Figure 1 (tube, one colour):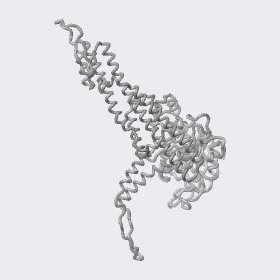
Figure 2 (figure 1 turned 135 degrees about the horizontal axis):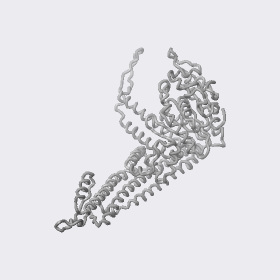
Figure 3 (figure 1 turned 45 degrees about the vertical axis):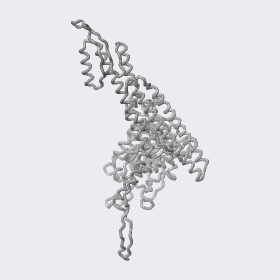
Figure 4 (figure 1 turned 90 degrees about the vertical axis):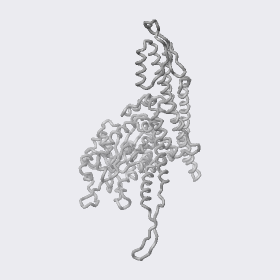
Length: 609
């Protein structure tokens, strides 16, 4: 970039353009909210039939398209703001150099060089040290040499001119680098010339987000920074202190961070996480599409089969080993997509504001982490946080969300005058194997801090008082118990522990909420009551001795929460079915139905079993 171009540039115009894109993003956001929370809800409630179903799908896609527009406009706005910020910094350098040149009587030439007049003390022959012209240097070593040489010149204008020329050269270099960096990124921030927002479009948006956040690090670093490892209260104070422009910048570039910040409003976290979900799903779908195109051919080989008894012969098609390996990878790629589709589907199927879904945390890496709320926890009178246990992961999140949904429905029936938000908190890496990982307390130990922060954040972000209940299932009871044990000030009113292997304490009072607020139930035929005896076959144990399942870790798990020794309160559940009679582990998953569900709904709404 040359001197004339930089002099003529007005960085504020790019900031004004950023304002325009933010306005467009807000309009798209408002349109999406109106579609999802008013039009689509009314259609699902008032219209029935195949035509209505298809129309609802079309409306849902329209809402997703507005989400895409909102995200892209937000990125463009942030990119333009960052470009403006970097140009403004370059202009300040140039303006400073020009001002110094004028004051010193120097001449700035069109090519950025600086001419200085004769000056200084006359030499012995009566001559005044001559003037000259210097060119700016940006290389640190060369610049230092140039300044040193100018310092030896008896003409003091030489050193001033060199300083001005160097500053001009630095300004031009900064402006050129900013232009070269942002021009291709801004050109890339455009949609395909069609009317379909595809998985590839969202995958491209994911790449755009990374590009803008990396390229805009200088601008974003100039904003008020979020507290490092901040408490929910600190996070909330930081967010309240940001301007609207700054909030848009963080949401556009760092949605994955904002979405996990406890203490921020639920609608802010939902906004950030839904964008991360859409981008992650786009990348995953694009990867799946690419893998499907690589299906080996031929997929099958023909093999003659002979019946040894009858001698009958026939030809069977047998998958090749190459195809089997390809199919195994295909199934692995499909699993997280199933979980993401289960989450996304909730945004197009809720009935009213009381069951409106909020995505309070999403991370698609590894086994995945998800925090999903049925109802707004910031405005609900009752909030129940369900911590799932062994085997929980993104690919199976549909079942865990369903449990939150049926509990929210039960609570609304039990206490129709007050609002209840029901949350699935898979904010930790859950053990995946019942008789392997689940015997390791480390998973629970690593989950204590994030669960404490989340529950404290619910209290921080809430508008008024809230009745808070923690519901742990299976290994999730250990996560809940250890968190409550180690954080006496945790804002929790009730604890429900079902199918528990132990909660890390021997007595309910050690959970710091009063023993009469701790409720537990374990079905008679729950698999958690089984342990492998020496013969290697499963057999029911005395419920109070079940902790032997965990061998050396029994001290970590403590007393059976349903025992008299534990000192809490219990509620009735059906016996359940033994494994092998009607499914693998039916008893371990039956708590969200019948009498058990009724009791949990009463507890979650502040009543008793």
